[in-house]
Image 1: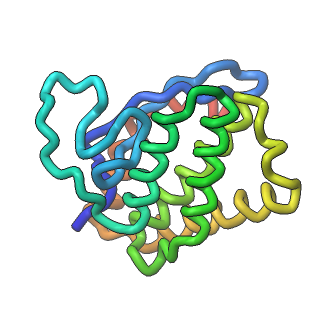
Image 2: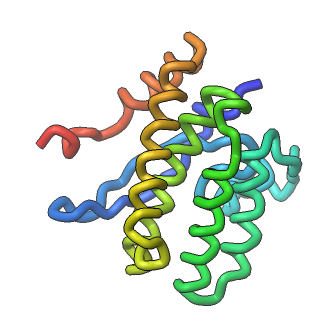
Image 3: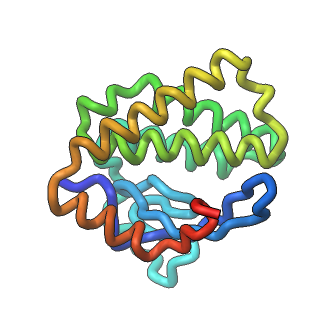
Amino acid sequence: MSGINWGEPFQIDLTAPGLGTIPISAPTYGNFGGPLYSAGLFVNSPDPAQPDPVPVDALDAAFQEHDAAFDAATTSSEQSAADLALIQRIQATDLGGIGAEASLYGGAAALVTLEQMAVRGDLALLPPEALTAVTGDALQNIGDGLAGLSANDLMGAFDWMAQLNTGWLFS
């Protein structure tokens, strides 16, 4: 089973120093991986049916827990606490044991979650050595995931990347 839903992207704005806000599109994962994507649906979906509210694996279960904690958060500090718990859960999960897609998506999710904490000014929740470890683990997971993708999923990744406006990466 494929964990990454290449055909179900979400839109997110990343903030990059010196570049401002960069809109990107990224695929969802399982039934809970991706902003505003929960129980197999986008939160603003006109279809109220929930086709499959069960997590597909341990990484998806971490996203499900994050959804609940983030939805319950009433302050930006509580949002960052939910984000930190997600990062810790990703680090505690044997992503390689799940598969290449879990490694790739889990690593990317950890980096994007750190970015969101940085935007809220809450990176101090992680001591410098922990921030270094999280970043290193995330990059390792992304590399392991890319190296282990099937030909079909690698084509899905390439198709997705081809649709991105990535000129900012090379400027």
